[in-house]
View 1 (cartoon, helix red, strand yellow):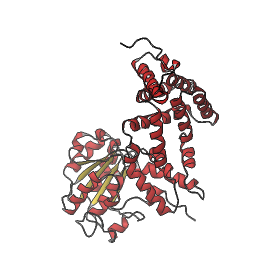
View 2 (cartoon, helix red, strand yellow; view 1 turned 90 degrees about the horizontal axis):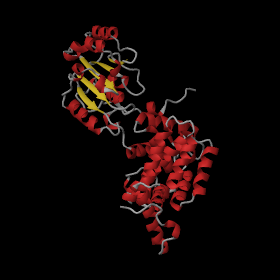
View 3 (cartoon, rainbow, N blue to C red; view 1 turned 30 degrees about the vertical axis):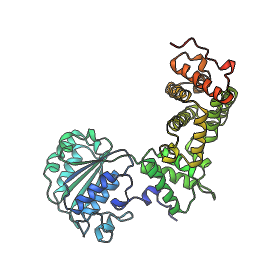
View 4 (cartoon, rainbow, N blue to C red; view 1 turned 90 degrees about the vertical axis):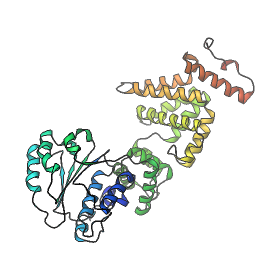
Length: 405
């Protein structure tokens, strides 16, 4: 029995309406198609996996639809069926990978074949993927053809680096910049796909998948595909996602943040020991800690950030962040964020990342050893919170630095 296709292939959009997060591109293209105001050359640029090549295929499909001019391909005519998700393809829509066919000889070969009329369709469409890999000589060989193509010819260039497409080519195209997809939109999309696949996924696992995909629809679906493949009867759980993707479990981050807020050095270094004993990378732990402190800083400034989606966390995690931010002072939070960010930079290329992690933790725990303004503010912040709790400051809470001027 054949293995099922990867998720990103099974759910590849077939119309512009199915492309998510790129309305600033798809709506103008649909309007141009419906009004029969289509240009002879397009340049689609943007990060990988955000829909450039897919949109190029949809555009080619709409151009050659027998019901054209239409905003979206009908999906019923022979041309639409040939260019469908599982279709055999069309001899008149040619995709070229410029990474391996970007030389001047390839460009001359394309130029010679381009003048032949399409076999079955209205247009002959060339989709040049990874267009930034075409050499300058190759672009120059195509320049006259792109500038004054025959009526039956259309070009669509797709690239992640539009600045490498020579200006004389770029100026003759309509440029559409694609963007990374917002986390909230990806989260909703993943939930919908899991329902279609009949696999349950814990809400706490969704932000991890979205984070691993980094705004790329294709990368996000590849991550989800991996998790679905390894899911058991319970579906995709938070533990499965954090383990496979290598993220620090929330329980460890909660423990270390609570220990920082309480000034409990033994608990903090106990968490560091647990990180090492469980085989986790100190750098990844530090990166995840920085993300957690960043979330706490935002929650401290905007208490309803989890509810409004300003930070992408589950409901339970949002409640924990609000409680943790309340136990921390704003000055201590911002100082901790600065220390963790600086320590993470120092860890790059370090031969003993555990030592640097322990130094970061010690500096956060000991604001008295920090004679900078941030250290003084952190001590005052801690003193004010102790006064608010007990009514009188304790002797050891007094600032150890000299007078503030």
